[in-house]
Amino acid sequence: MDTHTEKSELTLAAIVDTALDMVATQGLESLSLGEVAKRLGISKSGVFSRVGSREALHEAVLNEFDRRFSADVFEPAMAQARGLPRLNALVMNWITRTCNVTGCIYVAGAFEYDDVDTPMRERLQHNVLRWRGVLRRAIIQALDAGHLRPDTDPEQLAFEIYSLMVGLMHDARFLRDPKAPDRVRNAYERLTSTYRSFNYHA
Image (cartoon, one colour):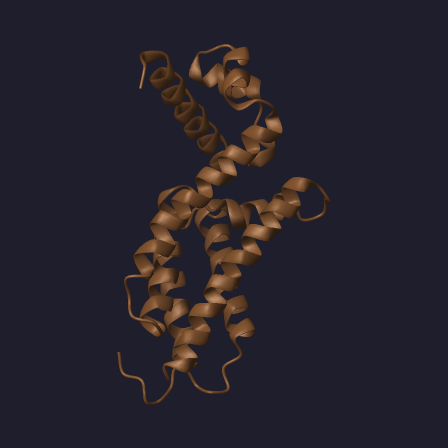
């Protein structure tokens, strides 16, 4: 790789990192090429030459968030046995990541774009539904493994888990309650205890 290409890729990575930091604290609508350039100490044209439009910057940020989310939450959980061990890992990893990286774009973005119809809303909705699908599949696998009661409704349990994470975002970020992660872990354990099969022993 020549020096020019290497510098260009490093700058692109810095642009996306800076944009992700902005989104985590100020939301997706805070993103602008000018503000990113100002934070990095480079020209606006320098940002434009590497990412293009503001919409392209949004896309790059969401792609990178998806990659990191998968690496931190989904991929480690796949090393766990199918059933409750995997579902538990997905949720615990999600809680840890949400608290360590100042929130979750999926949850925060849902409120930021809840009453508008834009391509960004459609992209976020697609990601949220895809992630809910991952949770639902893990729940179905737990059902098939006999870890959950036969009358468990996967859609309902996925909704309840997601609702816990919305509560975590509210209390951890808005109320700044340091006990929020422990509260949601306890709530998840209580929730799943009502669904667990009597024959399942972790």
